[in-house]
Length: 324
Image (cartoon, rainbow, N blue to C red; front, side):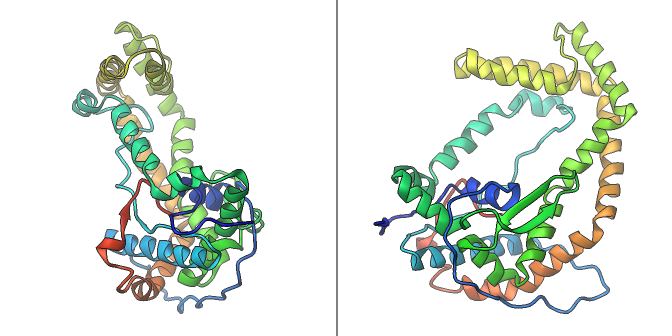
């Protein structure tokens, strides 16, 4: 098979994270094994959390390593900047009236994020490939199938990924113990869903949602839960032009937030979120600590990987995606 050269060729950035953390398979071809360095000795002191700069360094180093690996397999891969920090979210319902007046439910911001993802150079090139070339690119990047790595999330889902491919090779080179890194990443990146699941099951939250729903009905918005009102807002984009949909979304979000702050919902959900957040983190303290240790141990290796010329700004392309 002829492989494209001279341009950024890769699977979607989101697909990489998906393959690594959701067990979705992609085409595959084995990458040469790289044992990587071993983790440093374990200390009894809690490991410090890497700051934002350290996290960006690790993300960039991983992309540089992926790019080199892909080049060895006949694919050019653009090293891109990580996306902007995650936008504010309201898992239990919007409860900030002023924020809602400005942002609605965040529909405009979501469209901006989608445009950024569509502009990703790797994504654009990937979609120009033939079906056979796409399969080959996925193979090189993510391995033949999600086999070799397995971990269970705090919510009980088992996720798998491949030990082969450029993504696995890059993470092995940075973190040493690929299986340990995959396990702690799966666990720590899914703490929030476990936390929210506990909140939603709590009778105090259910009671507060009922009071919120009564407020919404009185305001002419007959939705039984914040999820229902959010779904109604999302449907507006399908039925109205963007400007009118944004205005209608904003009006609904303001009503939702007014009812959340005017009933116990905001206070109760915030208190429960704090309580269950502490509980979930305590249950998975070992995984949190090991992830931080692996990240901190990887920082010197990441520095070496991104040292000039790889760190030069003219070789960098800003993207809507990265490899978390």
